Image (tube, rainbow, N blue to C red; front, side):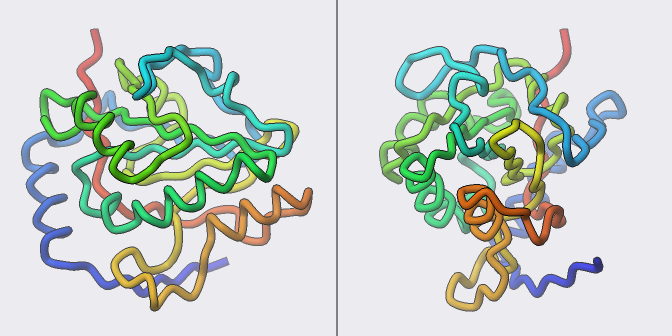
Length: 213
């Protein structure tokens, strides 16, 4: 199925991502292999520091009907554009039996705005009720094959990946959204149904992986 997206890109978003890419060019050892549909969440038992000071894992946040894992950060203009929609969707998942965990795998040494204190204030400012944790080595992102912020992975009740990709088809014009990929996938999982569109292209800034070792 060929996916066509009409996305309006604001100048600030283009500049922000371009600057970040210049500061931290990709390295060959940081080119992860994408997690395949039907696979379980990797490194699900790894403990990561939440914005409330607790150390928790993906496995601990799994819901009885499914689990949403979304890689995001503070600085990326694409995340900022989608933030309200991400938080609204994430906050509503718990009532539907779907666990949610947002993960920041960016290196704050590259982008200071992605440091833990900013995560805490960002979560509070946007009213996040789901965990927002630090991937302190970026190895969780590497294991998932995540490369962008934001990038969503939705698992069903059996723990199998049933959706991977973007939030919707228009980051910067919420009123012009026609395809709500992630919300539709969540609705399907909550109802125990098959996800109609299982994969879409993730749009956003590149993850600024922490150096290995």
